Image 1 (tube, rainbow, N blue to C red):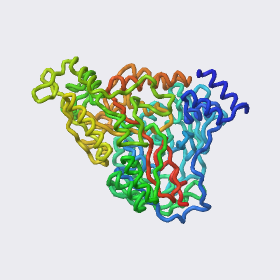
Image 2: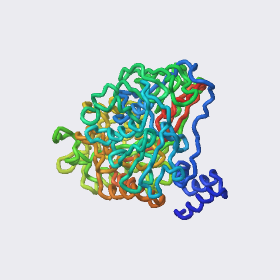
Image 3: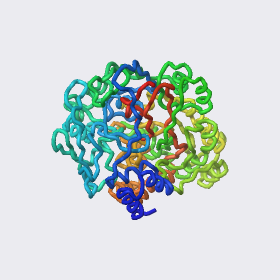
Image 4: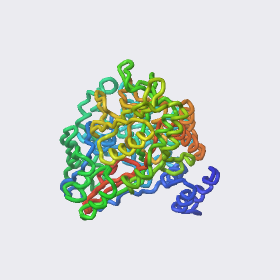
Length: 595
């Protein structure tokens, strides 16, 4: 389906010849899923739908305590430093963006009064500006009014290189102007088809200028509010013990009528996914457990107890392996895995290709992940329109051995392949979690049969996903040869997701290892395709550019996708949750209630 046909269908929706549902179904038939179909309609002045949880309580409060489990414990509460999902979830309890994403990929106003469209003057026809009208009457938790000054400051804060914000990619190439106290204009340097990035979702949480104003730039890590947040969200900060417990109380001045339902909030960190799932599904000690990364058969047995249920939301998350093409064992200018170095053996494309052939994705899905994962060779899998049709996976010990033989890697007396005095010996790290350790073992066993020695390393999840710049074991430092984890796709559009593959996002000491390109691998063709996608307004051509970025890294076998993952959580039977695969778990926490 070409852009002209899509535009004809859009006109049909606008003049009543076609229903919104029919439009979405027609596009789904050719691989354009609901989230992207909704955005196409929004760009053409057809209002987005709303698939948020229907809130039933007639008044705020009275719900008692709400108890959540994040087995990867939060360590900070500044959303612009939160490189780990656990810290993003915790930050979103207190801070809010202008808009978030519901489970169907619709853009839902939060601190904004409405979603920008061309009809209401929010979107310029040339795709270079977005005007946001802010919700009136919103107060920070300390009683100060929320205004356009806070939005402009958040841009200045995140865009400042000295701040070293994890979210800088959403802000560094834009300008933001205050029109009045309740209106801001975002100005892009070029036509921008996916404009809903700055101030939206995970990257969009607004900071109060009066608490962070003195801590922009080099002093950003010194702000007391990094650990004691003052936000606009449904719950006010009470106490925080990093790596352990976070507590909050109901925001009595919350800007959404009759919300929130619960009087107090507790977020318990630590433990593991199995114990977290058990605490909800079997014992009922907690109401909700995030990311129940547990063998599916185990979850099914737990669910028979009747106290809780598993919820699996479609998402773009991916479990994958990164092969380090830099040298993690040599220090250059105070950092290992420096982009100035090359890995002694993984810089050989033949070695990377062989390792990719030694991953038995089908067995990993069947025997470990079950309904929580789908085998894949593509980094981007949702929406389907952005998934590469040519990336295929294969498990073949025979082909892997032949590739290594042909590349001159010969088995030594110890059975380990070597060439020019260099052996194929690697340290393979991931977070401590039963399914991941089983996946590590499966891959190690296959590699041994091909003459590759693997040393397994498991890091406590709260350390592995920490944003602590002094910690040598974070996934962003990549001080090993290879590592495995899940990266989350925070929007129903893969543009920001794919900035993990651009040269200007390489994680370095200079940016405090918060650059999103953890692999350090770069390719000018990927940079070029990404930049082209950023300004291409034709949806079909834009998808082609983004697919190319994905293919370059996957075909280089630097990124080895394993499973496309649904977002799987556990919730008490009585708890109504708004579970979106396109935003963090707490994106609409104020709407949760107990039935």
